[in-house]
Length: 434
Image (cartoon, rainbow, N blue to C red; front, side, top):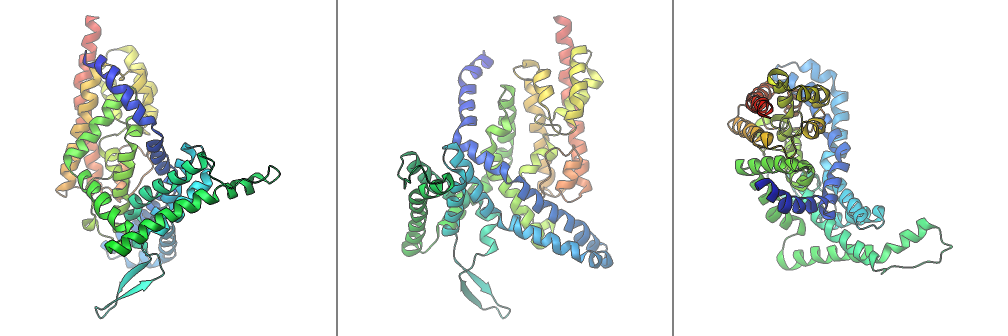
């Protein structure tokens, strides 16, 4: 009865949420900037190898020999993670314009320009003698990295929606049909684009004039920081993990449905951790306990539900030939965190035998990993790793080659196998009764 109620009431709502064009635009925007975040993470990771590790063992010769690589990595970081919000501002405008079926390039550029308009134009520089001076006419990196992601998102949304709505209502400059399409599209975007950018400019000016603050500062203080703070509680991590499993159980891609939260909040925390480590070379300075990669490193090994543990449990305990056949076909892909074959082939979707472990296993694993991270047994995840990185290796790379993190991932894998095994054995008995 519960399953029927969920199918009738819950699944349609979840499906609508997962296909809502604004949320899809957020998801696709974060996906589209993955090459940027990956390049920046690789740069930080390489510097950890040739600069930070040798320094711990006083192997200064290695660091000196790789100064050229350290310099290259610094340049790559400067153009990726140091300016991540600028890149994302374009991406969100591009994807949202596509969702509204308007010119995505124009939408991306308008969103990008609007973010720059909302970004403070001056900064305070501290001198060696302790005095400070104000500097105007520059964009400080501190405004352009991960700390500006929510500003880029909100400002990009406002500007792009204004642009798209005006385009859909044909409030544009219309040129004769003989004019080349590229020119016609550019002119069509002028009135909507100017209106959108002036709207952001007006809001920014009014806040500075009458409130003595900036739109950027307000969003950072009252939106981004509270969301990030809430995301770091164990309760929030458990709820997100359980919801992803529940969505998957009903055939919905849980990570995609919750991508605005997983990427918008937890990936922001990941990017901030990366930048903090790059600046300090110290794990103890990392700000966020739980980031986007923490789920993959410790709970979603093999995919949502820790299905690599399920596959291993099937190989050890299952007596059902069809189940073992699915596991054999799924194992190679499971090593690279692709679990659709086992989710839909076993199936786990709408299978009451597997509902409890499907939700229970990743929930238990995030609790173990969260506690281990919060008490300092393992460092927080601070590097983005390709999602197809095999389990255990993922945790090792994502924490800057922490052996304790790799051991924790192995321990969690063993716990996952133990829990899944109980229900694999139950599934054997279900077959006997059938």
